[in-house]
Image (tube, rainbow, N blue to C red; front, side, top):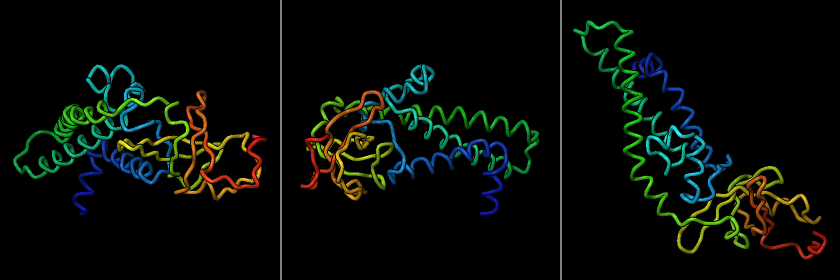
Length: 222
């Protein structure tokens, strides 16, 4: 274990090591639902997220896969190559190439192989995104979703919407600032069911209310 850490925290593997940690933490947070992900569905707006990386990604054929997925693959594969490459160089007893040269060569290999691997893997992944039916934001109004974050407020929140055909939408949801009085905050807690009643174009979020509104709430005053 000590030898592995020594390799992972030395040049050139260290260039990717902290990136791998960031990637791991990012996806853990996404899985736990504590981070808003600007993807309306698994595939419906993949191109929009890919554009966040600019024309560079599209030029290499990554346009059909979200930028965060491509970057995660690139960093992870680059890290694997540099760790294995560094370990191999150190095990070669008759190696006469200076450490700086071998390290730089391994880094270049990590960057290149990482990009190539991400490109090859993004091919099959792009089919998953391409096959997903394009869904308009307005098509989701009136449907029921389930809260994934700890709660939903006027400033943050995320929910999951599952359709009959199996399509899963991960959406950013908010309580309306014009929400009527008398609605308990517990109705917006994790796993609560909410109904989408509008879409805010400016904030790119869905406005929601609880499925079961308390009888004492004056809906007409909304």
